[in-house]
Length: 193
Picture (tube, rainbow, N blue to C red):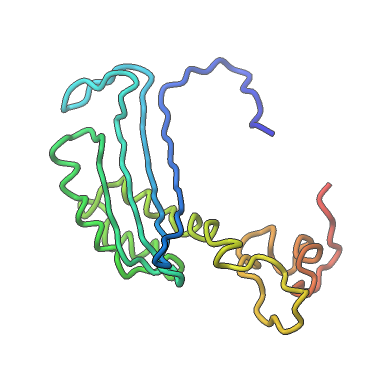
């Protein structure tokens, strides 16, 4: 179901697209390839010159290689289109500073400490900040078992995703329905209509 139709005329001016693709590698590691692009619907005059309509204002890519515990083992950054050619690209190698950070252990804080402000590119840093949830989605069903595990009476660890969002809170009706053995007491639980 899409968003509601606006009741006022609108004109598209700008499109930002962010995409992340996850790849399982033959060496047991995973690559998260993230990309951000910005496009205007008209010619735009920048300090560096005119950027014609349809030509990317930004086209930046970040590849983060992680191991199964979600620790970054390698990083590659690429600035294919930037507003200040010859200057923006100079920061690419600095993203190697992310090596050693774990996507699930104070990752966003670590990124901000290493890459915020003049220590990084705001767009590459923005890409880095969305990687933890993308990695979890990539690992779900492949690396992380997202099933209840009820078929195995020896399974003692609750599924990873439980108690990490409002829908899957341990005292919520979704957990009662889909993961009953992990559910906590639910006063007056109601199913979604």
